[in-house]
Length: 205
Image (cartoon, rainbow, N blue to C red; front, side, top):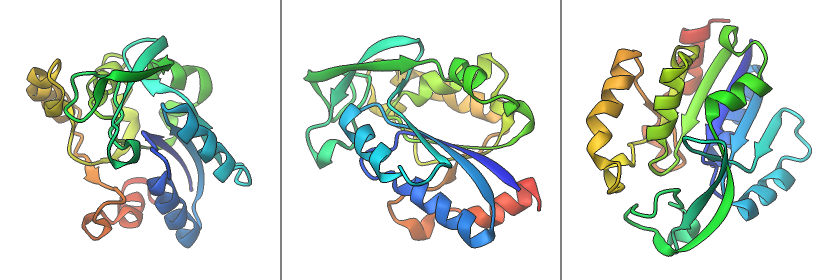
């Protein structure tokens, strides 16, 4: 079995990527990782970290509603955990930002993952409010259905003043696409989903 694992929002250590790889190795599953991190320094360190694993691909790109560039606002506490493209997010400094490359995720997939629609795809995201743009983009392009497993944690949309009113619509889009986000994070891993069981149940052997 071959799995495409897309992880959006790697932060500094890409812990969830390591967790996924460990599961694949234990269960003898083939895989390709596509990891995205908006902060250039974090991303450079991760490229070096995975340099010897040709199955892991790391990209310095922010997920948003446009292709081009966008400002990334820095969360100055917790070692940058919580950086966001939204300056109204509750824990960022609106005066401290860097400009980074931005992508519309659907466009990136179309250009870089041939045969995506017919493959075994897993999506994990923790992108500090940008999941609002992500889910709308994939829904508009009829691509949500191609992710049979979606992983992450509780949405940050309510923490972003400018998009907080959209939380109900976000949840409705997920519901319409029959998506239930399963917990898969480095925080309190004992409460994570049993991803190996979920993979077997969803994709079979």
